[in-house]
Image 1: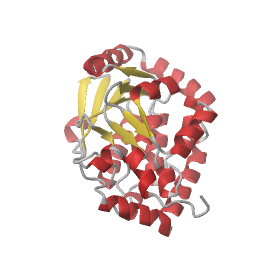
Image 2: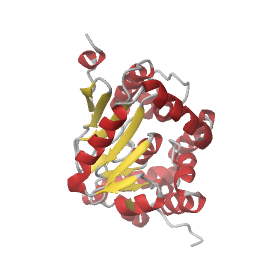
Image 3: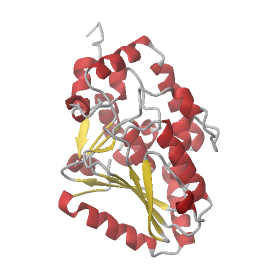
Length: 285
């Protein structure tokens, strides 16, 4: 049996559009949070791709047009994900994002819907980000939890958007629509939604035609000159989980769950704005 025939993921599907073009579709209702099962699925997929010299391009999209990857699953026990095997030896989410960036295949995030927090970090870890002009929302709202992004957004964003805009995005904690994200460099291109699927697939099929070694070499050179060393990223994870143990983080999370976090609620649609009303004010403000 082939890997695709044997692979039995829980919260995503894998489709071979051709031998050189694979599609991964996230599907974890109600809002596509990233939890231990999805992380396990991704680790299994990455292990296959790391030894596969046929697949040239992998497109990551979503079965839900409103939610690409909402954020990390804050209701899950973090020890479950951390107990999963880690090829890099890093924390679970950093292991995933670092390994995605190091694949020889081209990885494309087709962001149609909301990608905040770890969802945004997943997109940042891929090589190329295409966004629906009308439906994409990206953001890093961790500052509202009195935390830093744990999957490396602080290291990846400056190379894409510049130092000043990285500060704006990470310190503001707000949402960025597809058009603004394109203008900033957060995504490569924002495409009208009615053309989005056709555009992404056409680009992926084009890349899928090329020589695999040439693709791998181009990626290696670009990564060499534009990425932090892999060993930097565990520092971000340690800082996030250290903050997550603090009462102020837990108080914000509790208030958000009371308001409908991780449900298909108005809060999830407007989390970038609403977290400013829920996060406690600095008493000196």
